[in-house]
Image (cartoon, rainbow, N blue to C red):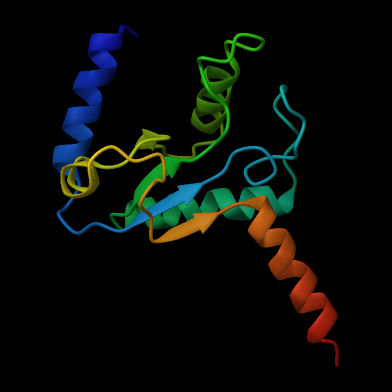
Length: 139
């Protein structure tokens, strides 16, 4: 797919999104699959549940942002972002944007490295939450 086609698809998706739409930002490595950077990690039951949850929110009108450190500008591994996007397509995980804010957020805040979201799914915060629940909710 040509770059111009990707831009056109992005514009069409943005127009389909409702104003005030909720956004979920999801990490790739460790969240949608096991951490195995720069390769794509294995997927276990928990990763599949997260994928189903993302798909469910997307069907309800949420915008999905792949919020990852993988970058096409990585000189050592130039295709790592493309591989992650292809993996999401293979796993039927909808992705609306990659590492970028919505048009509305950019218009309101200007360019920002931080992605505006309502929910952030990341193995780092899931890990802490899991530790807290196991540690303090023992009966």
